[in-house]
Image (tube, rainbow, N blue to C red; front, side, top):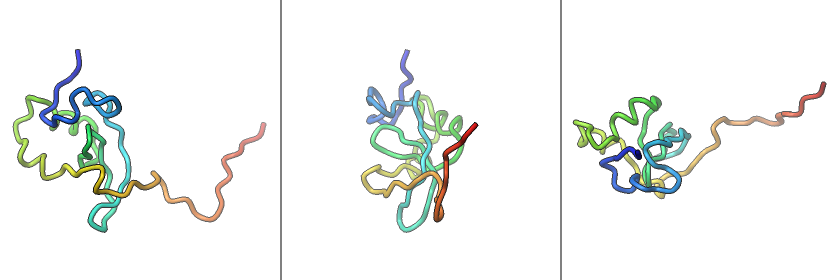
Length: 93
């Protein structure tokens, strides 16, 4: 049974329903944040379990949580790590 969220765009979303909260780095209002994609939005934060609890249909403090939601279209997604000059990911035996 699919989890229900009070964030309408998360319900039935093909990529980012409540069961799949991928974390990422992004720039919003000139600052770098971590957050979880949910529906067409991103919840600013670092704790996946907390994010899921805050976004479920039964969540109590929706007003406060809504202040941490930003539209994905309003952010610049970043790489998970800043890579310097040269990184060699090749491994030999």
